[in-house]
Each structure stands twice: as C-alpha cells, then as structure tokens.
Image 1 (cartoon, helix red, strand yellow):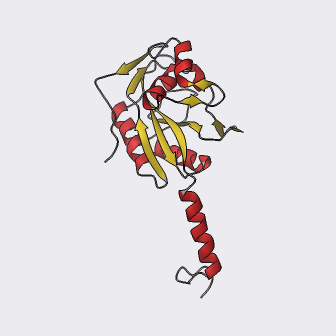
Image 2 (image 1 turned 60 degrees about the horizontal axis):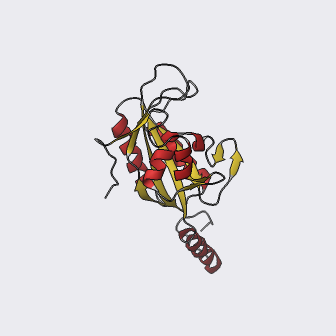
Image 3 (image 1 turned 45 degrees about the horizontal axis):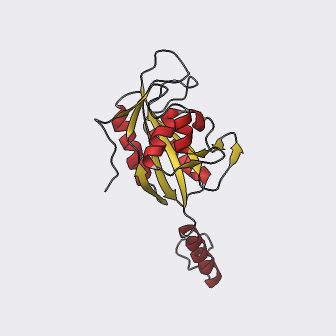
Length: 199
C-alpha cells in the first residue's frame, strides 16, 4: 500500500502526531466577532440564512446573536435601500483566514456580487475582530477598519456582547456613546423582527 492509500494504517508516529494536532485545535478556540449586513432581497431571511450557515460550520460555535438594526446606507451609490445589520459572537478553532474564506463562501451562496464599491448587496459577512490577532494584510485587516466610527457596527456588537472591547480602541460601550448612542447615524433597532440561533 502506498502512503496515499486511504486504507493504509498510519504508523504509530503519524497517529500520535494527528492526535496531538486535534487536541491542540480543540484547546485553542478563540472568540471572534462577525458583522452581517444586507440591503437587497429578503434581508431578514438572508441574515438568518447566514447565521444558520455559520452555525453549521465545523469548528465554530455561535455564542450570541444581536438584535437586528436598520441602517441608512453609508457611502457608495445614492438611493440605496436601507440595510439590516446584526453581529454574531462566536468561538472557533478556525484560523482567521479560514474564517474569512467561510464568510466569503456564505456571501457567494446568497448571490453576493462585487461590482460598485460600497454598493448594494445581498449579504456582507465581515470579521470585526479575532481574539489576539492584529493583521495589516489588505485582504484581512484585523480589527476591521472604521468599526470604531460606525454605529451600525457598534450598536449590534454591544447588544450581543455587553462587555465587548475593540482592540486598539477600547470598550465598545464608550465608543458608541462618543458617537451619539445606538440610534445615531440613522441607525434604529428593530424590535419587531429578530434572528434566532439554530437549535
């Protein structure tokens, strides 16, 4: 049998190495915070679908989901529909880049088309922060730039995680207060709709 034969029994060394790797992964879960946004199609169904898809991701456990906030579009083409925004707090053993790829795959599954910068979209899945990681990689900036300036990010984040801190900027509660509170910048909490965690 060749080494690539899936029926080949691993050597004792290989088996020990694999067990050690799995054990390390199980004990290295970290918190991450993901922002969801949608302003095309059935926005609520899209956000719920994104929550469900994240919950189905191996190596990821959702700990909290915020209320839904409706937000006027910021930047980009004029006369865009309003966004529904929410934040998901999770624990994961996925490294940041794998989590980013999963987020991109979920966007694609919901028909995300990347044309105009800050243009309307069926779904946005953005990593706001990943525990212990600061990244200046243009494809994966952590924490997410401009988060500290945006009520539509901070309000749902505080709702989902009252003790949240944005790395490099401090407590989310203080940042939100400095911007005028959870209803500044055309943001409002939707009390009539909500997202649910899959059972």
